[in-house]
Image (cartoon, rainbow, N blue to C red):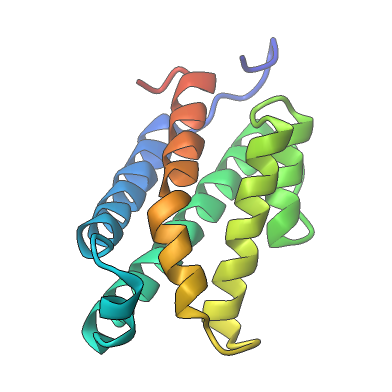
Length: 147
C-alpha cells in the first residue's frame, strides 16, 4: 500500500490511462485468435496487433511514469527504470517487473525497428503474455485502491 504521508496518485488520470490500455489490449485480443500461419498471411491483422501492442505497452510505461511522479519518487532515467522503481517501492513483484521490462524490449523493437519483427514472437506474446498486461493493470488498481 502507499507509504504513510505519500502524495496520492492522480487516480482519475491513472484510471483514464488504464481504460485506454484496456481498449488497446482488447483490440489485440480480438485479432489474436488466429494461427501463426494466418497471422503471417494477413498484413492488416499484423498492423492492428503491432500498433495496439505498442500503444498498450506505452500506456503501461506512461502509467508507471505518472505514478512515480505523483508519488514523488523522482524521475526514471530510462523506460525500464520505471518498472524497477515500481518494484523497489513495493508496487510490483520482481516477476512482474521482469515481465514488463520484457514488454518494453519488445516495444522498442516495434518503435525503433532494431531488428526485423518476428511474427512467431508476436504470436507467442498474443497467445501467452497478454495476461502480463492485465496483471500489471490489476496490480496498480489494487496497490493504489483505484477500484
